[in-house]
Length: 289
Image (cartoon, rainbow, N blue to C red; front, side, top):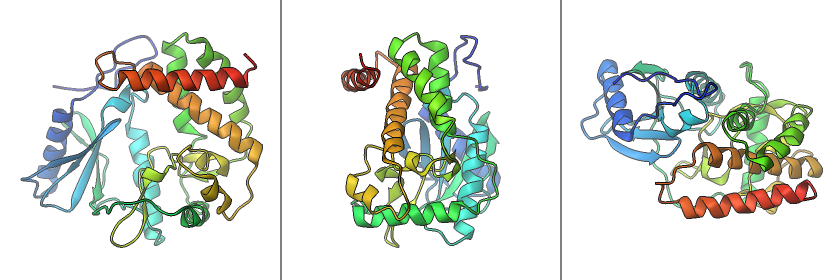
């Protein structure tokens, strides 16, 4: 089956590869590259599928559900590989791209390849998280890549605006998107949350640079998974009003994804409805409603 990045802007359906198709593309890529992959293992499913190419110490990434929000994944994967490669070469603690990371095209799907690292349970302490993010920002400042402004949230929100008439989405986007375009800009991870700083036997490593972008440091501190103690431990100056606005932009991004990815057959439907209700209530209060 051939897959194309079907346009969503004119109402056409976006083809979402299945997990099985992502695995097949990963194995096809492994064969071309001469990687042993007789015992593949799906290690993550969500916006992307990640396949561990056992016995090769390599994991692939294939965008699946995320195509509904971002129907052309190639530029995102290219930026992710380039920035992670730069950071690895600088000696930064990141999950590094494999030696020939691509992205490669296999069976019509884009496949990027990464070094496999064993995770260990736990999370990084707040006192360490803030300084690690500060060091990451310092390293990213030297990155030569031309990074788009807040590409993750702005793209996801733009996609939702074109397919949904939800009043809170449109009202909040009118304010927050315009505000976001006025914020200071520097290279950012783009999707910092506690799950993207992995604990390994050799120490914590940053992961998942798909949303790498430019914007204010408060965006990378705005995830609701980041505690106030971790924010307080960040070594640089923080604009607290902007941090609150960034958190609301993140809420709006989540609302956008829920509206675009709504699937009545999803087992998590009840949880998604409750989450959407909380977000809408918060954003409506922001607007004084």
